[in-house]
Length: 229
Length: 400
Image 1 (cartoon, chains in turn red, green):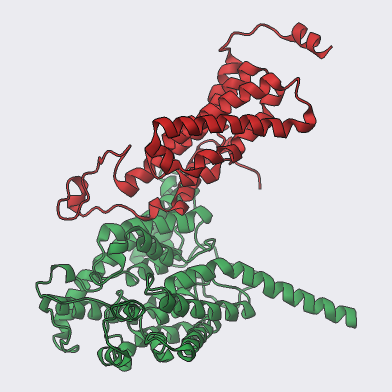
Image 2: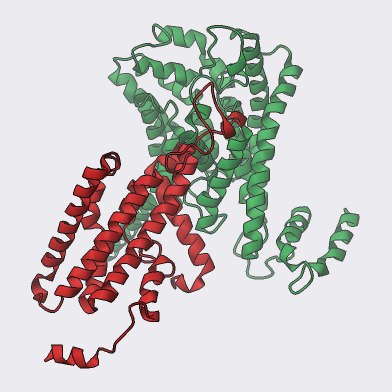
């Protein structure tokens, strides 16, 4: 009965209609999972010391949210609601294991640096949040786009934080020493003028402060995001 | 003065709401109220018994800091000369004018940078938020240079001041809203961000790095003491230490250290000024000292290591213990507010300061970390003091 209803109601919609594009773009800015919904903070603190780890982590999360959203959305009508959390966890866990194995095989260095945090993607609130809030109530294609959008929103924030932390903390970006060499005795670039890398910014508390500053700037610019007291 | 007043009076219409320079009103108002009394004064139903306002309170702290500042300038000049000649036994009171002059050349730029950066940021926030400049930074701006080692690069002072004003104060809403001491935030930032410029043997005397004399170290009393906890102590035993740093010299402040903190004597003069004018809290200062003394005595009882056996009184005169107790812990914004809470706050602060200092060689001076920790705990202390009071009164009602 319900399936028939859905068939009658469903209007044919182009793959990238205005509504679908919104699913992709909203999470990047005004509905960012990290700065607006304040989810996934812990991993944002742990793996943003370097740009390359942040990028790999971001891509992994995009993959898990997108593929996971698609699978959950496809299963949503045949899944008994009572066991839905278990099903969601199994799907997320399977995807995370796939990602972890791929990283181990092709990017062993970065996989080692990310250590447990790839495995911990499964506990990232963004994943379960999107499964519950979106995929359980929408069709596979929009869910897929929603997953990509939210994963990308998370990835963009990681990259901004990692940019600041790697630039000020290590004087490099993606491992390239763009501020010159800081080796004592043979300094080049900025370091000849007495510049020193900031050790505090490598410590986790500074990542939290940087996320806080991003939230501050975003809400100052877009006052509709500010909460009432 | 009438002349200045006339000028300000003539300029005023340009700065009122809707006028040409409305945006610059905070700047105008700051200068005008700095020179003369503010225009808005309480007219009726006064709740404050005294004419003292924030600006005057802050000025009293600045005045109390002057002994520390002057002594710090002289001391900095002395140790710079020591580093230059490579002779740690240089007579302290000779060539006084030279030392004072050289010291000013090192300390004054620190003060200028601290005030310049801090007030600049405060002005920007004042203009954005449409209020006049808050006075809070007057004291922080003086405390920051006094907590710096003489050799710290100026740009680091600027970065730390900016960090402390923005992250330590403005994001909480500005003066009076900060949860931790602003000056200590600046110092803690530098301590963790640029440890090589904030600790070790090279930074306490200007020019130690370039001194040509072999085997010269610019270590501080606390740095030397911390080596007792390692395998290679600087001194064979405690007597070696006490002959190098005598109690009276440490009390007067004739030892290397951050610019303004070496002299317990100058700090005590400042404490006197703060107490007479009622600006500083005697409860916090006294309990801070008692806490430090108690921890020192406890460590004496435990013994077994020369550092543990250091006479407890020494702990109060070396390092920044007195400076922290008198000027940092008593910050009226970030300290505990209740009378009982102040006692607990000060006592635990002193206790922790000595605990960190002795037991963790990685942090030779624990005063900064202890006070920051107590700043964060202060609301909790106040909460329990107030709850205790409420419960006691409730009991009285029930029994009556």
